[in-house]
Length: 436
Image (tube, rainbow, N blue to C red; front, side, top):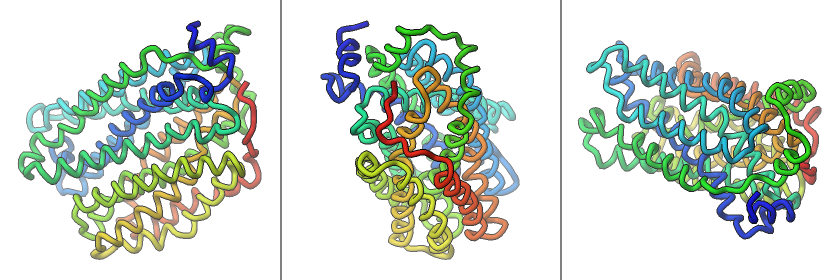
């Protein structure tokens, strides 16, 4: 163990270590890159859909493109089952390097993939394969990074110390939206459709190389170092131990169901506003930048609040707000919404999401013991993300066609009801729990 790692272990907290900022940045950057890549796909799908997924009309091409977005989530459970136990056995930092390499490779493949007109059916197959690789990577990234940051944090300010990871999601969407805005605004339409949309994906591949460089030399977490010194676990015993925590796994699954709101508001909303109200895509992207900035500010503020009053109140308020306000907010976008109307809808929803995301990672970490923490978080999280998260834009498009924003609100409302019942009757208050 390095001298820095011994200092971490002695203090039990990244807050007392000189390398705190490096640890936080290194733990969060992979999540930034992962979500940049996923976001840029969702934001630009409407532009490259006809090249890779040609169909009889624009909506059909868009649905096919978002279907590939959803298929990418099928790789998450596989990645979670493979990578999570490995992180519990071999350590957090090693697997963080592996996930970022795979994420960058997937982005590179999409950026260089020939079109359907050039190679036929092989084009959508390659896109789907790249999405599956990114999904496999994402199946490990979230929970390993969550575990890494929370195990380095002090109990007093754990949610605040770990919040940069969830802020990184917002910053990645912010960066992806900014790149999408600049790309659509300054590259002529013909050039954008032929090659311009590829540039943001190639930027994602370069970011992954930088992230790998930043993660070199990170120290292992004190909690894992202590656990590994006491007992060397096999992969089989780690997986078998998960059977002892069915309630905790169910809570993770239910909390992650609320990723639907995240994808609809911070990924799909500009496309939705364009579809139902004719709002210019560049205006929608610009509004999303401001809304995502509000999210990035809200997450650490709410995380700090949860370190003082607890985690459960924030979960409950977030779900209740979406239950009550989803339909009124989405209804404002139907017709011909102004930029101000879109901005209001986007910012309000972003703050509702921030209430939930400010504590999501810390609660997950506080539910499980060290020896199965990554696996306990990762497997139910990835399974739920595959079912609900990846299908969110596709479901929103389909439900809008069936009955407009009311149907979308019913879908989100059902998720919120299940979430509220779970938090009221099952979710414990985890603030102050020891991670050792």
